[in-house]
Image 1 (cartoon, rainbow, N blue to C red):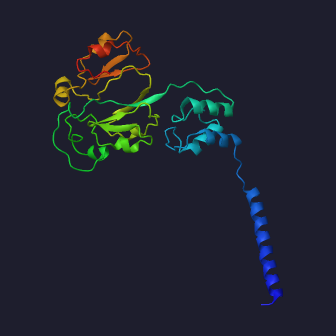
Image 2 (image 1 turned 60 degrees about the horizontal axis):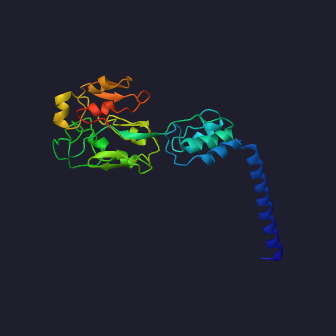
Image 3 (image 1 turned 30 degrees about the horizontal axis):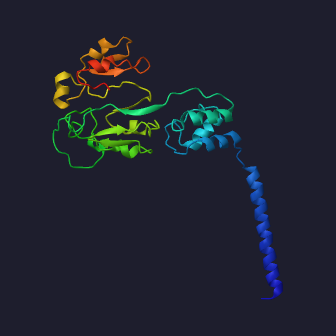
Length: 263
């Protein structure tokens, strides 16, 4: 090949490359999607767990919603108040004070306190076990099965199975709600981090049936209700429940509970 042919080929390729570059530049400007600078700044403040506990499909979607004014600046439960305040400064609004929450497992039926109906040998998955009549080997059909579906769902290593019952590490818990959604017995709820007393049971059976299944179950006797001076405790479906917005932490309910299920 002559030098002229080489030069010609090089020139043609160069011109084509230049034209493609110009076309790409024009297309980039023509089809550019404007991004709110605040959205980028908000996204930088979010932790990036993409857990979805805010109700949006990940941190990018939440950042977009906050920048558009469709979500509160403190909508990220994982980031908590520090992240909410930082985003509030970006958006030029004050972040409302939001009390920290943690997951709480409403069951005290550990291996030494609950009766066993049979020995289960199968898939270690609470959702699979929930399909079996009676919800597994424990006599209490309402309690924690102890097969760790919530443990595997938690992205923060904040929940573990201890002596047959799920236990939450309050310091690690970010209240993302994934364990709440995963539990087939609906045993887990979010409570204030500062909660003084909670009812560690979910059984809706009556007194004798409860005691036959678990030595520490709530029998729905109502002693706690009569002791509370603030109307913070009610008994529905044979189960006591504490309204944390009314509870003062006086402890009278826990003192009188015959099953010691209020902690």
